[in-house]
Image 1 (tube, rainbow, N blue to C red):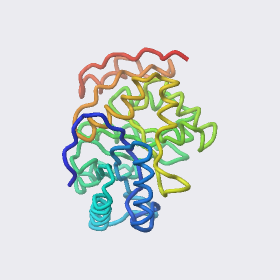
Image 2: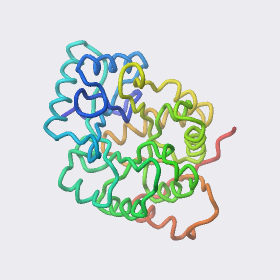
Image 3: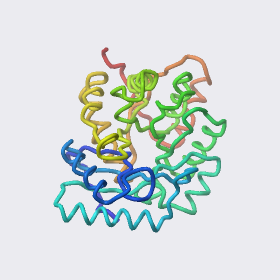
Image 4: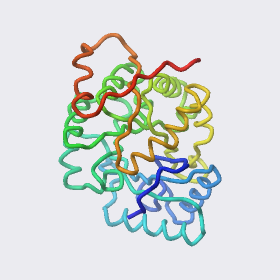
Length: 286
């Protein structure tokens, strides 16, 4: 539906509720265009539109999402805004996720069944998370966990996220988590995950042009200050570009958060089975 992206210089907002009239994002096309203008002012070149899917309150029909996407895309072209749109979804994590995505591949990034942005509950960590992630990987779909730093259980048990990432799961951090808007516990978790190589993609999680606009620049400055300029480039440009192209992301191995858990030979098992060995991260200077 959108042109195959190149891997040239770009700034990618990987999580944004930009489509009008389909979820808790903008309710009109004009508000959606106002969000697009904010994104352009932030030098964002690509926005991944991620309406809620399988959500208790918001789960728009596929036809409605496609129509909204096309309408906004046409309006952006009419205004000559230098912004590329890509279609995906923020899919609620559930036990039957593999079966759902098999029947609705449009919920995956660009409909290609290679990556899926999926949201865990905010206040719990179901015991089926790891098995479902394993099953997704078996089917060639890489789960990208949306804003895991906002999950209160992962804030207290960060080694669980390390275990997932060590096996091939990817994550997307919210820009406003890094800058402190969602509170100190969320910000602390976001910074911890960043320092340990558990962060791969950046999203504004924008919902409207004023209260929650699509802004990334302050978060990218935070990433650069904490993890270095190269890591900011990887998270803001290179890795999301590979995801949008349906390509393997050669991210570094994460730095262990906790010495407890399974033996390393087991912990590394999925990674060696599914993907080539990654280079290990070096701990950034603080």
